[in-house]
Image (tube, rainbow, N blue to C red; front, side):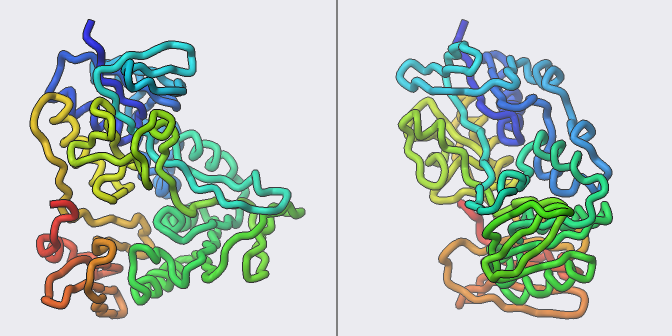
Length: 383
C-alpha cells in the first residue's frame, strides 16, 4: 500500500487542506492526526459563542467519524506526535505506533502566550484556544459578575464583547494606550474603545498584569501601575505563539513560525506547514482567509499540480457587534500615513502612500460600509 499524506492537526487548516486535497486526489491514502477529539468546528467562533448561546457541543459541525467518512481518511483522535524521523519519513505517535508518510503537513496551530505572573492564583488564569478550553471556560461562568481580560488585542476585545451577552462585566487590561493597537491607528482605537465602553466594557490602558492572587470573592490582579483589579475570573488573551516544537525537534528551519516557501514546503522536501504555525516570506497570518488560500495552494501541490501561493488583500473582520470593525492593515514597514476621517457614527481611516496609493484601511461603525469600495484598491499581500 502506498504511503499516505499525513496531516498533523484537525483545525481549520488541517481539515480544509484535507477537503481541498480530496477534491483533486481520491486515491492517495490520507491520515489526519489530532491531539484533540478531531471533531470539526470553527475556532474563530469560540470568541462569539456566548452571544449565540452556543455550547462546546453545539459548536461541533461534524464529528470525527463523519469527517473520516467524508474524507475517506484515517483519523487518529487524542493522539500526539512525539517525534518525526525525516530521513525515514516516519512519525512516532503517543500510543506507540509508527506512522509512515509520503508527505507530511504540520497544521498544528499556535499556543497561547503564557505571562510570567506572580501570586498564588497564577495557575488559575484561563485561556481559550481550543474547543476543550472553551468548554472549561464556559463551565465557570454561572454566577460570574466580572471577568478580567489580560490583553486588548483581537481575541481579548472579542471575548469582552461576547461576555456582555451573558450580563458579565469585562475589564480589559492592555499595555498599549488603545485597544487593537496592532491593527488600528490611535484615533480609530480611541473611537473603538469609546463605543465598547459605552456598551459596558471596562478598559485599563498602559498597564500589565504582574500577579494574580486569591481573595475572598475571587481573584485580585495587581498591575504594573500598582492598581489592583478584582474579578471573579481571569482570562488571558495576550496573543499566540506558533507551535514549532515538532519542527525544531525535526531539524526544520524555524524563525517565528515554520519557514515555508510559496509551495508551503519547509526546509525538508517532504514536510509542509500550513496555518498559524507557518511563516511564508516573513508573514505569519493567523486568520481564516490566509488559511483558505494556503490550503487550496498546498492541495494543488500535494496532488502533483503546479501551484504558487498568492495572497490578495484580506481584511480582518473584528467580531465586536458593539463596534463593528473591519481592518486591512498595511504591510509592515511600508511608507505612508494614516488619513483619518471621524464622525459621530464611524471612523474611516486609510493608510496612503506618498503617491496616493491606498495601502490599508481601518473602518469602524458606519464606515464599515466602505469596505467593498476600498478593497479593490489595495495591493495584494503576496502577489
